[in-house]
Length: 280
Image (cartoon, rainbow, N blue to C red; front, side, top):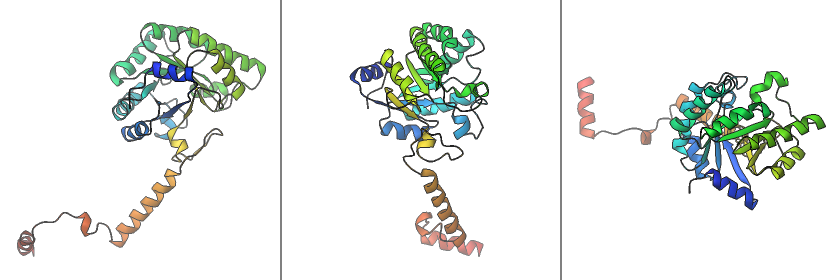
């Protein structure tokens, strides 16, 4: 398929064409997502929870992220690839944010990076954009701020916080954000933001009115069962299929039915006979 660029996404928004967006963390899944024609792939710090087993995204570092982003780029060269800026990779200082964002672009071949936060990140987004690093803004439920939020809770459910999220979106667009990801907010807020901003919007738990939808790949195919958010639709139960395959493999090995003859390498009969004589 042709390479998806920010202009591709803008054109789809202008035509009212919905966009598809999934997380991906490795080469095999990236290949599958590209074959399925997914528009945007995010190598998310959600990897900390669904791949590495952490209780939050906070332990994920740049050193953890970089190899995974490189692998996804190799598997999906045509998708719009977003590298997720991990905790404390951009909050410490603007120069640090530019340095780390630049690594995603130069070392991994990203099309953009994503960072969490509202108006407090406006100066950082402006500086990164000026440094030729496209930034996807992430507002609403921001997992890196889970300690401040008191858990993974939906945001914007009263008029004051709803207005703040809308204002934040407008401020971040003005600061140069090339797109906006909205997580865990009422659909009414997402609809207003999508209508008012010119950049593509993506929602995860933000209702149907966004320009595109996002899901964590492990959630939507049933490979992560520790916690399933309200907004997740499971399109498959791959985890159950894998368990069934593993159990069948165990039975075959224990019964001696695997490996069978068709799984073994053969040698010429005369060589086999000679070998048996030598070691009988």
